[in-house]
Length: 148
Ligand SMILES: [Cu+2]
Image 1 (cartoon, rainbow, N blue to C red):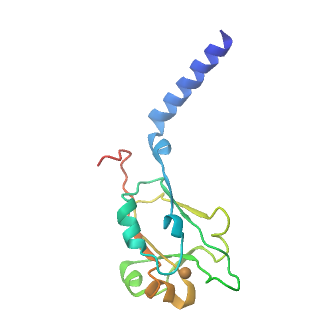
Image 2 (cartoon, helix red, strand yellow):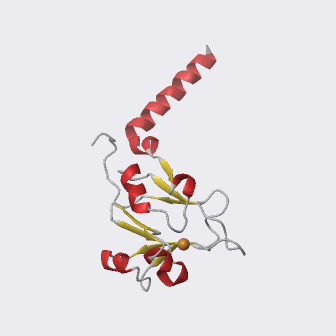
Image 3 (cartoon, rainbow, N blue to C red):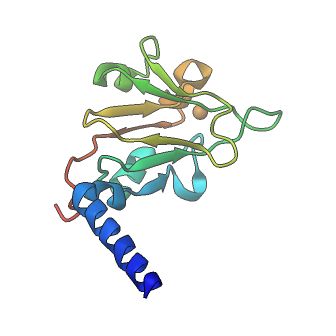
């Protein structure tokens, strides 16, 4: 009887959480590039089209090996505006994850703002962005409903 009551209490708590924070339970995690991960030459713009739309509280996981003798180092930067994104100009870019933060389970970025997010790799003075296609844009949607 006691056990049944606590199960009912737990269920009520879950229901209350669903009512109060529905978005928290709908958040999804996406490994950027899927099996390709965060690497030179993959088309992330196509990946975004395939995976989107994205919503607030969804997260992106950037996975890449730390610098070593055989692989290119990568990183994650956020551009301030569309012009910098287009030209891969990193001067005003903000560091999101450095060259070692993509290791093991990766670096997780959670969408908390509705703004347009301009992600790029900042390595080799922007060459990974210009030549390596390591760039993509996400504007998360506010809705908690995935049907719209
Ligand atoms: Cu890179």
